[in-house]
Figure (cartoon, one colour):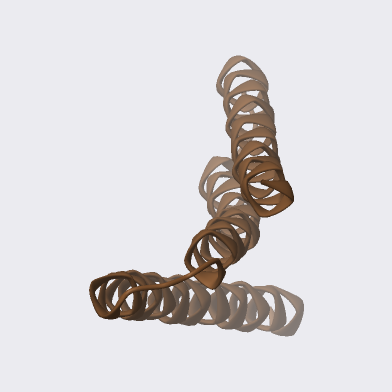
Length: 117
């Protein structure tokens, strides 16, 4: 019973974290769209990277929720389902993290290039 509340709390935490990041990203993008800035691409990339980081955190909360739900009297099918879910979310986490790192590298290379000019 307590585990169900903890799992629900982890799901709520994931929803709050991801929802807050989405609203913050939308607000930042709209503010950027109306501010005739020349750095539109850089700022948009920054918004994407920030959203990606928060999505990773939200995925971690959902994985925790799934683990908590399976921890109470798991059947073989529950364990297999959890394994598949964790595998898919871990792969998604990996690729989002990789995209974030590549975006940060591009941003660093562009800023170094701008300084050399």
